[in-house]
Image 1 (cartoon, helix red, strand yellow):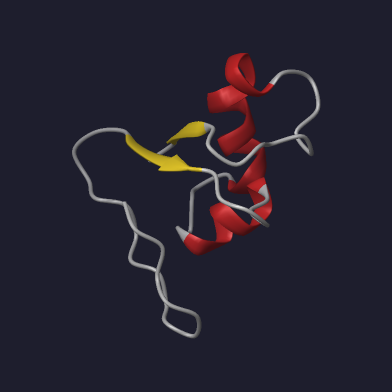
Image 2: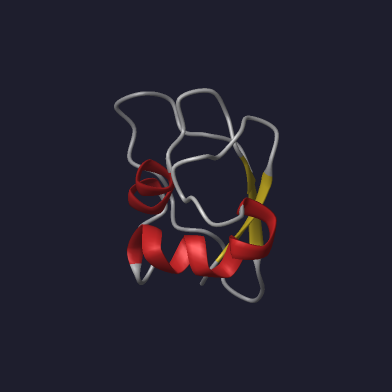
Length: 70
């Protein structure tokens, strides 16, 4: 899934199954959740990926692949 260009609204993730997002520089769970209008916001994104992210939701690293809750 490719990031929208600045100033362009993000399309919601496609329906029908989990989508993924590869963390980029300057991403936060909140910015990803807002970009894709994820139900449950950053908290749902964190819970879906807690095993991969660990106990601190502020410590995401570029290159990590996250599963987006739909």
